[in-house]
Length: 190
Picture (cartoon, helix red, strand yellow):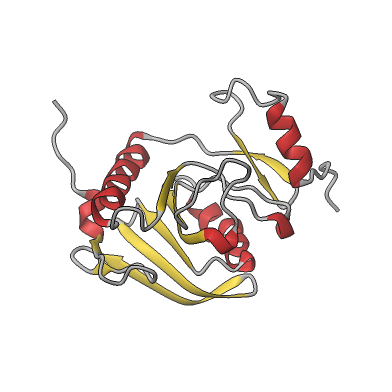
């Protein structure tokens, strides 16, 4: 039995509005199933892979086809959750009054290094249960992209791993292709 105090999504939003998690650098949290949990610190590899993924998104998506959101929250009201995935493609609209919800999410991506177990566990279950159609884990240790599709309860019915020159094509945009190796190309730092 958990002794953690539960928080609703509305309570969490009021806490944010009151500045209870400031400064963000010291209090980087997300709401998962009613619990306010700390987020993992991000290393250099994580940051570089996310930049590569973000640039690919902007370069590849047709203008106005989706909103690219980087490390911004999505709302999962039925699960009392507001995770902050590394990258989301959302339906093309403005989100002034709320964050994207499952019906708005076209693709959700987590970049995983130290967070790999969490991204394959609690995050995968959360996104599947919310009905998000496609979830990618960019797996830094294995230089791969794990693609999960067809949510069924707390799991995804489909899983495929892409490495090297293998191309992954997003469900909603099958004309776009990303080779896993594009995210992991290493150049010498100056």
